[in-house]
Length: 123
Image 1: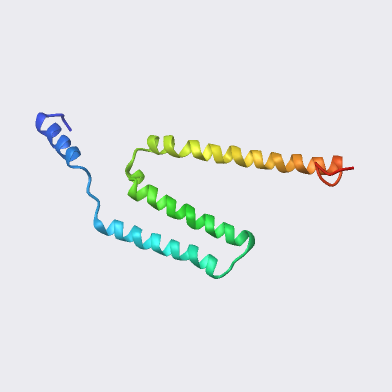
Image 2 (image 1 turned 120 degrees about the vertical axis):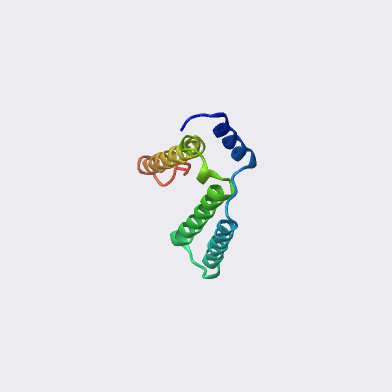
C-alpha cells in the first residue's frame, strides 16, 4: 500500500470519527453482567459458607471486572503493550502480596513452635 495523499486522508477521517461498536455487543455484555450479578446474589441467598463462598464471590467479581475493563473501557481493542503496561503492575503486586502472606504464616508458625502457645502469651 502506498501512502498517497488520498490514502492518508481516509485514515485520518476514520480516526477522527472514532470506532463504532455494534449495539448488540453492549447488550450482550449487559446481560452477562446481569447474570454474573445474579450469581453473586445467589451465593448469599444459598447461604454458602467458607472457602466455597469466598471463591465464588471472587470469581464473579473478577469476571465482572474483566468484562467492564475489556468492553466498556475498550481494553479489548488496545495494543498488547498498553494492556501489559496497565495489567502487569497490579498482578505483580498481587504476587508479592501472596509471597508476604506465605512468609507471615511461616513466621507465625515458627513463633508458636519456638515460643509456645502464641507470640504474645504470658509465661
